[in-house]
Length: 454
Image (cartoon, rainbow, N blue to C red; front, side, top):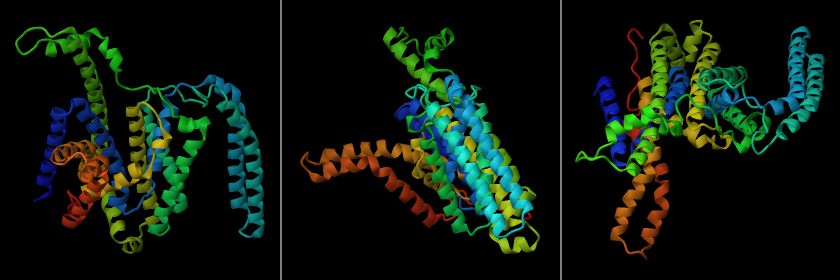
């Protein structure tokens, strides 16, 4: 079967599965899964650029996702003026001390020849700068976190529409990737993977503990959204009239009761909001897919795959391998950062404690491997399959166990065991799917197809 037929078949099956969930469970559940699949597809495409295009093993996907989520807070949350009044001045002084330290450090590094004296001067600059930063920083954070800690206790953000944070999240993740790339790119691939994993854990630790910036484990809630609120829709005359037009009468033509109509309006409001999110997320997926496909089929994309396949030969042809790796690492991280901001937008809250490697690194890698690394459509279908199985495995296993247990006595130990393990079957299914794909289609469901003249 060629790739074109695989694409049609794969996406048709996924559409059928989502429709089945809509009819069998609810359209709210189906659309919620669809929205998370779209966000996961953006993350998967970002990682696919790094691994599929250039062969970079990025184990720090979680860091780019988290920095994108934090950016959503810093862009959309209203500034907490009491916190700024209490700790804004010393925090600015600490930041100024940091900039001065960096400037003096660069000056010493460039002006003094390599040797013991330069190392001594650099140590003196760093220690002096650290002392001044720490003095002002401690004063600022203590003052900021003391401002109504149950409600705020942090500086807040800029109060802009949250949709702007999608671009800002990409830029912030790209900036972090530039720093990481300057430090770790050029190392061996296994060292690079360890470095990205370590930096990812450092980033999550910062977000969990720096309450003045992100509220830490107390979370940031009540973020603005780019779509209507359900409660507003339920009180809007145009929406009530729209629902009444389609659901205001029973099958026999008689009007439905007020209670049933009210419940229908509530459910319809949730569906409408999720459809609005779907439209926004789908637009982002299509835009990124278009740019990614154009880049992959361009001379730049062919060069990146040449570097991926044989770095030595590409270097011998005059290509700056490290610089190109840094370039694609920054681009891929920016895409993941956009997805992180989209996820915070969908949730309406920022929860640093939820950023765990299992969800934001391992699952994204599974998506790319299952779909087919190097293929953008493969990254998307891999995201849909992985997230759908991750969500639906538990209710499906509980349904299956409930039917099996009918055949077993209530005192049967197997009955109790099946009830206990059913919620965790998703781990088994994800591993099974990964093994089967690697065994029968090692290049993924939609394998990479080299462009013409490659």
